[in-house]
Length: 216
Image (cartoon, rainbow, N blue to C red):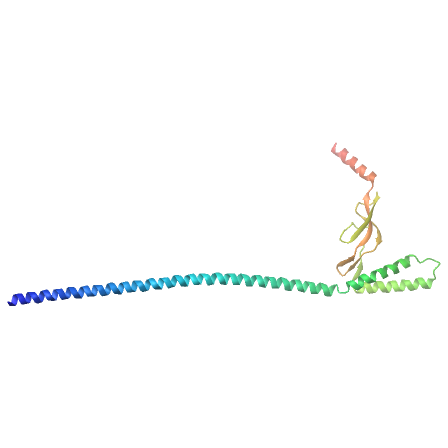
């Protein structure tokens, strides 16, 4: 074989080797890129899973936080309600005893009202002293009489037994106390039994006629 043919064959072999090397390199790079893409895709899938888990945990955290806030509010309401109930219990602890004492107090008052000249002065004086002492004791423990006569009727304080027609007093005015009422501290423990005024028929007719004249 001539030298030229040898050189040509060697050159061709070198070119084919270069092509093979290039092909191998391309395949290697392609495989590497595919591997990288697979790795990236796998990591993205993990990221999606993590984000989904984070969202679940965030939702659960919000739910637990709301639940905790509700429980805290319920506890505060319970605590406040218990404090009020305890305060009221201590404040009005003597109410039962006071309500039992009031009928005796009323009997003393009635006895004084019906003492006449036939009774001895010393007997009357004795009842007065007991009544005054009783009054002081009630006042000291927080009992006060409800002033009713001449006041406008108030269902929170008064109990109307009847109405009476009057001409010189505004309607719904307490004109007479039948039985006194009392407050224990700031609580009504017995309403005052009263008679309440109402406009007389004549006054009502006059008012109606006056309104009729004004309209005309």
